[in-house]
Length: 333
Image (cartoon, rainbow, N blue to C red; front, side, top):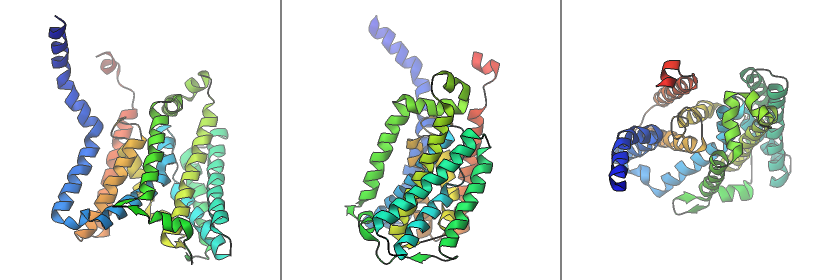
């Protein structure tokens, strides 16, 4: 009798399992199909050196937008992240060019990111100014300071130091930085999915009052998320200074669309409609493969930007759709 009931339950559940799996993991399937298509057309895509480049590029972007992922999951937005990265990048390069060592330069670059995040957090969480307005303003200020440090041009770094060596240290086709970032994202996944901290992040987007009633200060949580976003951006900026052997004041312009697209597109898997670290990772890899494969096929930059723009619109549309409360008829069904 038990076997009959189990078989019936399995049969009843099976029709819903496939759509559920597709909705949760379709982005992974898209990444695999895209990689297979590009690799068929251009086998060089899977050359160990190119795989290492893709993973290294993906790892640096993943660091930059880890904090952004949680901010958007909490119902906030930070469009200053790429300019904070540029400021951290230029701060480190400026100090190195002035004779400071890598330790001091890196610490200063990361500290300036924490300050930028703190300013964003105070203005949004404490003073209740809309985050889009705040981060547009602070992003512009960060970009201007970054440009001023280099007097409008890049700053050359003579010695990329130990960071430069570690960034290009590979284990086969896998860079060390990719392994480190995988561990960081694994820890972040545990924090997001297994700890109450992660539940509060998603709860803030629904009701700050409910989070406060649960004994957690929503304002402090939002403040922390903005500071964390600033630190993540600045860390990526410092690492890019070592990777590029220079400070680039316009660094942020190349990460704006990609960062938002990765977070919003990643919110279309696992927790559909809610940005999450696994979805962000998958989306970053998809974008990196798209850039590498399309470059090998000779696609122009505007063609890639059109595709990225469409993916961003798709991510925004799904996020908006999923954030709408269901109708009474739907909820009662």
